[in-house]
Image (tube, rainbow over all chains, first blue to last red; front, side):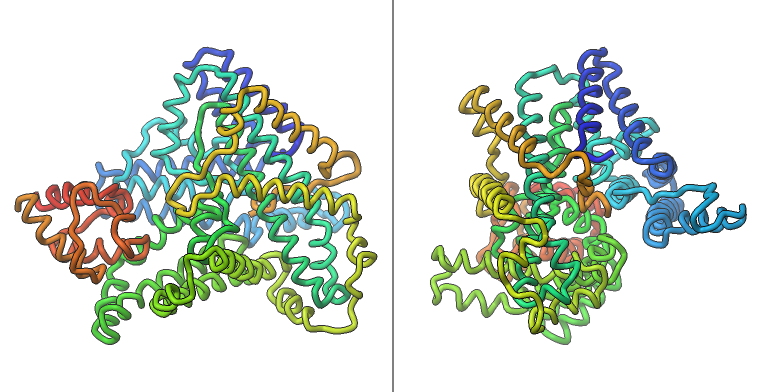
Length: 514
Length: 80
């Protein structure tokens, strides 16, 4: 079940009805039943996977808790986390179940095209799920939380349906506190309105912008032998729009649905394309993944004995200031490799979403002292420099998106080569609009993107530690009529200009496939 | 060790890690108050504090400290 479907909206409406009509004491049971039903809608293997993983998570948490001996806690933590991640790798990256199904089919006499007995579909979105459940086991081991004795609470935490496919990632401490709070939440028309506007905004970004921006992206990335020269940066630029509106739109739907239930989820985006540096970009884009990897991967690596010893050695060798950076670089490399691998297990992801960013961040750290000296001399506090920084960061991000969108590393390299290749399609409207992007589509896209820029400009705060301003709160402050007017505008605009309907196959959210 | 004695040592650690002899911290000091105290420098600080006091913070403490006051509370708890 796609999050951008009428079926999902009907599902949410049914859940809301039961949630608020039935007694508060059974509320969380309603959410749990809805979550398992939602996993079931995603497929039998998805349901099986989340159930097995939840049992593992529950047992792992109990064994990793403080009442056991340290040796048992360590072994239990390592084994359960490794099994959890190995399950994902087997299912997703190596398609072990798919291979097994294929073999069984052959064994029972199936040919390639007929008599298939065992159907298999890869569960989608399980990368988020595995990190969140592994985080629970580690939290028990590190005594951040007490292991949960009630299995159903762990099951609810791990399968909570709005965030099951695409996050945002959460900790048990946060989410269980929200569940507790939800038990006493009263029905509020205001809450439903806020959630509805947020969901409509997500649908608008996905169906009006992302799906439309995908047209030139698919054309240019699909045929970069023909679409060369300036077409390449144009294609990557449209992909940046597509990816941002796709993923942040998905988060709007998820957070909006959860808000209606009175269960607040963390924000995953904070105006990332306004970032001044690559480091800042990653504190504003996919925020919960960055936080998870910092707390559960980078910190333990940096605090490990080998890295501390490396730090001592490098400080003695290169001096205190430079030497202390060496273990940081090592940890950052492991972190960014993991980020890239997590995105899909292929080298184009490892490079485009990992190693390339590692290089940019380390170069930024190396040149930071020089940059600090130069900045006052060139008027770094002026608006033009601020704009230059954001444009520079955006271009660096585009360089990674080339790898992210390409099918393979060689494809991405060929995309770069295509920029300088001659003899391709001439840069003109007739060739560009072959993607289906005619003038009316382009006008709709430009207006819609300007609306996103306007909303992000309002939300933006220069410090990423500061919570962004809420556009919905602003609308609400003008009165409920204004809020509903905004909802109706988004609803009608999505109905009229959205890319959906019979004969049109709206792609699933890009990050839901991860 | 009294809280004042801990702060005396802690100020030295902060000054050394962040290369700034003017730093003095108190219960309400948070990362944004100290120039250079980001997520990467945080671990260098934690390791330096551990060495100074001969203690070992858990990962929960490492990632969960809200301010320097909480850090001092944890140091006192570890020193017993």
